[in-house]
Length: 432
Image (cartoon, rainbow, N blue to C red; front, side, top):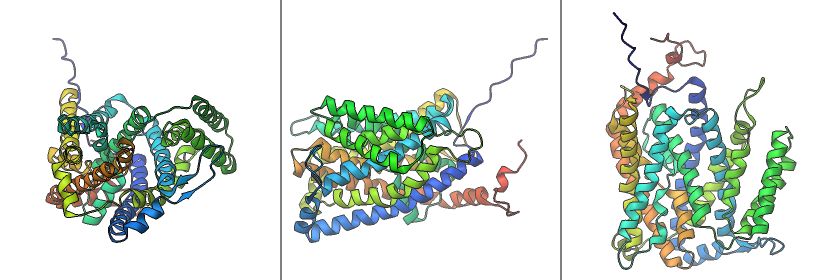
């Protein structure tokens, strides 16, 4: 009698991470969590400053500094934060994305399927929700991209403030989702919010990127070479009309993130380790300080829920992101026969999907890019981002708190190191 073919094993979704991946995740999220708390403080400071001393806030934001020639870098402090400091943020995002492709969750198609589908659905559905809300008279369709972004630092800051314990698998899913989300966001910015392209400047910037790649590929070292080159690439990209943050992602993607020979860390991982604290602890909080200062009054808050553009943003973040991420993940798991980790439930993923609706940093950036000629509308859009992100944070906090005791048990099990050798016990148990 013929032997029946073996039953294919179902791939586990949100299963235990490998030890190197868990170590990397722990280090990365520790910095992002501190940065998230600083981001929350910076946003609160911006709101207080803008509402108590609006004249002072506006004058500081509009203070111009920098040379006017040859590349028109006489920019306001607000523009330096938006176009300059956020380039550092996107540089780190580019390295993260490259590392995910070569060593992380995106290195194999089967593992990448669920977070990529989740990110794509988490971008598409909020845009659709916004478009529907702004399809009638008085709508502003140009803001469709505002509710599409996830802010990992803000989300981790919320987790730190409310004291919620998340297992590493859920944190890894949230980080991978945010990395893919950042890539989609920068593509949206590059394609839809770039205008008046100067091809000579773009060509020179691309030539600079080629030189950056050549030097890095041939093992040239030295910050004194790469830092001036990076600034020149950024300045030329800014001059070209393509949003300057694109240069940050491009340089991050160029760095080598796989290890060769006896390397303990790759050059990309080393540079990310150095730059991430600057991004999370300075660049993003300073951007928030200049971007989050909007007037909070009764009428202003009323407009958030009564006008099409801000209402579309709130609904896009709270409903679009949550349903898009959760629904996309559930459908992808169903069709790929992925089996959820038995220690978790789909309700856990729904709570994390709600947390991913926090779209602070990039959403504030796109609010300014979407309505460059209407500062009042841009401010209402920013207020809607704040309200929508706050609602997502509150709902996610409630949902996560319901399961926090279970999460704490899982985290304690992950971290238990009874022999004190630095390796958690779960990684020393024989495979079953």
